[in-house]
Length: 173
Image (tube, rainbow, N blue to C red; front, side, top):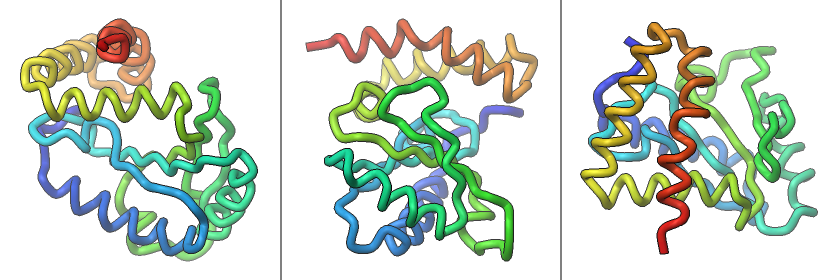
């Protein structure tokens, strides 16, 4: 099954990942946020921890990028979303006992960017609003069914089918 019922262990997975990432970025002025469905208690999700590393000054990106590369990540560009850079594990060298065994997506975002705002506002709204959380979960299950439980097709459909739901939340006063 593509989606799993909420697992309280996802919080610990994020904490374990963020501890290692913080060590790699030690001394750099960044914050780290658990975003995505695994950050929302009670919400079904793909068992993938989504993480945003946030920096304020654009001049800070290169040092963050360099440290992440030293920690075994590859920079994959913004993949079509401005001010949100994607990093993936390189798969080269020795396996890290945390970074290579907890499935995660890692993004580096400029503070105040639209991509970051969408992540944070959606997460916080779903945490605070049980009705919206259930509506979003229903939508995700419908998309997973339509995608035939295929991860790539699910991701493509979800990007399109959840946009108006998320836009409505973002537009709230």
